[in-house]
Each structure stands twice: as C-alpha cells, then as structure tokens.
Length: 358
Image (cartoon, rainbow, N blue to C red):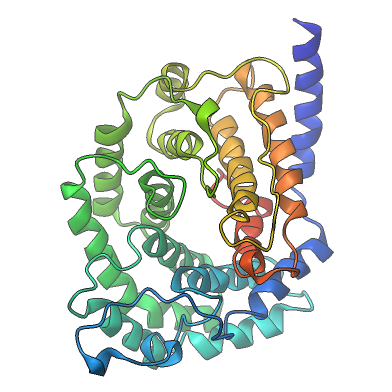
C-alpha cells in the first residue's frame, strides 16, 4: 500500500474514534446558543405572504411556537437542538432550561396556530423543503424520546407535522428536476432528513415515495463538479448532500458503484479543503461555517456506507476531520448572523445524527 494511503488509514482510524465523543463544555455551548435565541423575537427575517391587512402581525402572533432565532426554520431546528441535547444529556446543567424552553413553545395551542398559519392561502410553498425537513427532524427526535413530557410535545406537534407531510408528498411527484443549490432550496439534503423521519416514524408510504423520487432524480448523475464548490453563500454541498442521500437509499454494493460514477475522490489529504470564512458578521459569508459543518457530517455519512477496506474511505474521513475542525471554530456567540443557527449544525455533527447506530 502507498505510504501516503497508509498514513491516511491510521489517521482516519484515530479521527473516527474522536468523532464519537463530544466534549461536555462544547455541548453546553451549543445548548446555550439555542436557549439564547428560540424566544428572541427580534431581529426577525420573516418569510410571510399577506393576503390583506388582517395578515399583518408580529412574529410571535403569526407563528407562536417558532418565532425566534431570526427565522422560522432556524427556530425549528433550534428547538430540535434542545430536544436532542436534553434527550442525550438528561443530567446536564442545561437540561432543565431546555425542557422549560420546549414546554413554552411546544404546546397544543401554539402548534395548532402554526398548522393554521401554514395552511392559509398563498403559503403552499412555505419553508419547502428546508424548514419542512427540520420540522420533521424535530418530530422524529420527539418520537424517539421515551419521556412523558416529550410524549406530550410529540402529540402537540402532530397537526403541524401532518400538514407539512401532505405538502411535501404533494410536491414531490411534481418535482421534475432536483434543485442543486447550496442553500435552503436544495432538495437532496431535505430529502435525506425527511427519509430519516419516515423511517423513525414508520411511515412506509413516505419512505417509498422519497426513495423512488431520489432514484428518479439522481440515479444517472455522474462526474459531479465538486471542484466548482463552494459558491460564496453555500451552507450545503450539492455534491456531498446528494451522495449522503443516496447512501440512505442504496445497498452498500449499489452505493459503492454509484459513488464511483458520481464523484471522483482523489487519494491524498488535499482532495477537499474546508471553506475559508472571511467575515463571520456577514449573514451570507458566514454560511460557509455551516458548509464546513455539513460537509463534515455528509462525509462521515458517505464513509459509513462504504466497506472498511474501500480505499476511498480514509480519504473521505480525513476530509471530514479537517472540515469538522474548521466548522466548529465558527460556532460561538460573537455574531448573531451565525450564532442563531450554527449550533444546530454543530449538534447534528457531533451527536452523529443521521448516521447508522454504532
């Protein structure tokens, strides 16, 4: 074996063991970022369609569960962060505060109002697909949490969940082409989260629909131009998100073959470098911190679907480690442009959400 590859194999084994353990202070910092914003109404970047003067109102009245963290989808995944960390770290110092925040938001009155809001005329594409995917991720987290209070929140969220699942499943058959952006409109990332929800909740109809549409949209793709990435405001990789979706859909053997046609992975530790973030106070440039974090978990996901002897695996895990390190550097409270959402991306990464159970 080439000496460079040997070093990568050894390095990736050490990296993989380190990835499985998140530091307590790191986790507490992520929780604090969400606690500081899920009920912070302003500033607010609202995506709101008005039909008349009657539709004018402050965010807390329009969407009373998810009005914080600058925008609706960030509020949703901020609540997911709190649910996940309170579930995984029930004895932590932040767990009680997380539960209190969740209880304030996830009650029947608030969530029925949310369902009514998204069902109103003119909101057919509201938060589709990105916000819908994160709402389903929150529902899946509550589904898996064997806790009496969490079961109450789980029941309360069902009306909103039902509306959004109906929106998603009505849209997918009409989706002739995938959306290959690096931001909210991208389809591959959201389909991956929605597929995970379907499997957690046992919704076989939605699972089959997503698998079918994923194959239709992506099976024949080849030579993804990852060297063109990133665009200057990306927080998702079009190439890696697609591969991370398809590893959920295909068998190990089929995925290995599909990946060979889809993505060239060069030997060496410089195949894919983390994005440089020049200004973390800029709300679009700071997206690149999120890109580094999401690339890290997508790379880990891709590696998890390859056999241990696959020579691409150590290269992928080495790239995952460098992106993990770069991404986590940007997760701090210094600038609200990033702090209102990066904690969720960091939590998804360090808690290994979306990966097969060890």
